[in-house]
Structure formats: structure tokens, C-alpha cells
Figure (tube, rainbow, N blue to C red):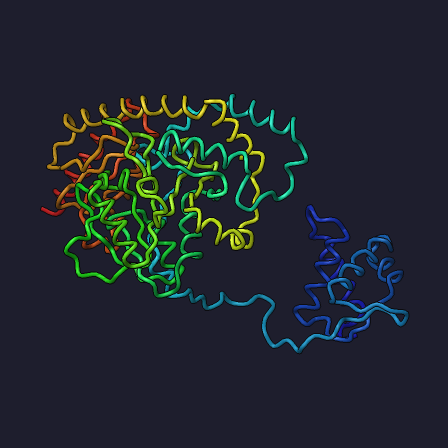
Length: 486
């Protein structure tokens, strides 16, 4: 043994004296392990017998043996008839506590968009958050309890990788009525929100180096998915008719991401003319269109805009939907609708990429849809958001005196304001001190410095009573910023 017996006992006595909530066994385990790791007990050192060790430190022999057995199991000690020895370790020339490692993230990480703050509780004007306090939680709890009562432990296994058949069938029926999409359950894959749907599309349908078109400005999650898959991203500008690629000298795409029913953050609708042209372009270049049906459920003027997937049979379109905006974000449930041929081709891959799960929640959501609760909730939220949309526009007209332009509107849960001559990112950072969380419009561009400045005001989660004081505060911050520039 490389240290005297008395020194070993002193070390163990000191550890036992300092122990707090740990058991005697864990204290002995950590003391001996640390002595081995730091080199005080060297490889091959002979330890006293468990009886002697227990007598010297005044603990039971069972406690000592339990600690020694755990160290033996983990390979620190070797125990046999000849006694207990320290295992063979390479000579340690480094300290027990190492300096911080030299962390080098991949180059792709630097290309990712800035993360979106997720506050709890949600601050006023946060984009993309529904009125979660209006969700019928008691009803949801009753349905959930009913599912567990009727099916119980049968739902505790993994389940179908594509999701519960009952929910997929319910979604298919809902889409046929609300979005004009003719599909069946075999074409639907359940995901953890729209972002996982984008991730799956890039995994299944693209190769590193392929060109992906994205709306610019647009959904930052799509950019994240394309960056980490190694796609070359081309930003396509947006106008009042949605994505506008006509006349641009850009590389031909292999993948096109668009939100045609309610572009985020501009709010424009992709015109029928451009939808058909985009479908022709995708066919010409053998490209896939990812249709993010963002906020299509909340339209306040005219009829709902049909989905691109339903415009042409066998269109090269993967349709993405989510319940995060219509129900509540933490549900983390979305879905993909695949054309029949693609659904058949990817079925084995889905089994490798997904594991199923959340089965009770999925069965509960299936009941929520089938019994008509989902349609009623959507109708109620549509009335609420329409009212808040109009109230916010009135407040903006009365309280926001800086020159601004409202981009599109008439749907969704946010209003986007174009405001020239402001540092919108610095403005929103200051607004957080007042519990206001609008988003900076420039932050949704591929190159923020080249983008339009302004504010994206979410009103889904914000009561009308907060509109006037919130807009007055934002006006004060704009005035302050402009005064500093002057």
C-alpha cells in the first residue's frame, strides 16, 4: 500500500465527519473512489480487510462491504481470496479537477438563427402563443382520464412509430372538411410539432449540398433544420402575394419551404397564380414543397384558403400542421401529410427514425376532435382573435405615433409593423424589462442587417386591456431611441 494505514483511516474519518445527507456507504464509496482517482491510492495497493477497516472507522462491516462491492463492480477495486486491491490504472499525471475543455462547436452552429425566448409566464405581445387560459382544461382532463380508465396499461408501450391510428384517422377527416385535403390515415405521420416535420422532410428528401428555398423573412425553424442537414439556403423575398421568385437569378431548388396560407411574419397569402406556378416549378426541378399551414385556422375575412396539397392530385407537397397554436404549445404535437407514393416509400424509414409515444395524449386528442370539441374551440378562438385583432389596430392608430406600416393581416395571431430607422433588436431587448416581448422583424431575415426593421406583435396570448399601455411603452422606447440617435 502506497499510503500508511493511519493516513487511510484519517482520510476516511475526515470524510465521515464532513458527510451531510449522504449515507455512510456512499460517503465511504466517494472517499475511496476519489483517493484512487487522484493517485493517493495507487494501482495495486492492498487495502485492509473489511473487518479491520470497519473497526478502525467505527462503522458496521456490512456498510464497508457494500461500499467495497460497488467499487469492485465499477472496476476501481479487485476483490478475491487474497484480499482487496486497487485496480490497474494508467499513471495519472493530471490533476483530479481538470480545466475547462477547449470547446469547439461545428461551423454550422454559427449559422443557426438566434433562439426564441420562451418565457413563463408568457409576456405580452409574444408572437406564436395562443390564448392558453381559454383552453378547456377540465374537459381535456376528463377525456384523458377516460382514455386511461378504458385502456390503462395497454397504452404504456411504444405504439405505432407514425402515431396512434385513431388520431391519424381523426386528423384525416378534419382536413377533408376544413382544408380540402383528400387523404387517409396511412398518409399521416404524427410529429412533435411542425419543426420535427421539417427535420423529417430534410432527412428523408434531401442530400447535403442540395439547394433549399426559404421565405425571406420567414420561419427561423426551417432555417435551423436546413442548416443542420447541410443544405444550401437561398432566401426568396416575400411581397403581398407571398413568396416572390419570379425574375430572380437563383439556383434551382431541391426543396422549397413556404407558408402559403398565412406567411410568417408578413401575413400575406400566396396567390393562386403563384401556387400553381410553384407546383410547376417543383415538378420541373424534381423538387419537394414543404407546405407549412401556419395559422390557417384563424382567418377573419373571406373563406379559408385551400391548402396547396389539395390543389392538384399527387402534388409534390408535404403538408405540415401543428396543434401548438390551436390548443397549447406544450402538447408538442403536429403532423405531416404525405402524398400516397411518398407515404408508402418512407414507411420503413419512419419506423427507424421515430419510436411512437405520447399514446394517451394522442388518444385524448383523437376524442377531442371526433366529439366536436376541437371545432368548437377553434370557432371560439377565431372569434376571440378577430376581436383582439381589431382592437389592436384601433390602439395602434391612437397610440403609435411613429411612422409605421401594417403588413397584411386579417388572420393569425400577430400583426407585423414595418418601422423605418429603428434598431428593432435593441428595442425588443429593452421592452423585456417592461414585460413586453414583441419580436424584431429584422430577426426573421437570413441577414438581419439587410432586412426590414419593425415589430411583430403577438396578440393571441395578450388581453385587450394590455394593448394601450403596452403600445404607449413601445412608442416611448422608440422615441427614446430616436432621441439618442439625434
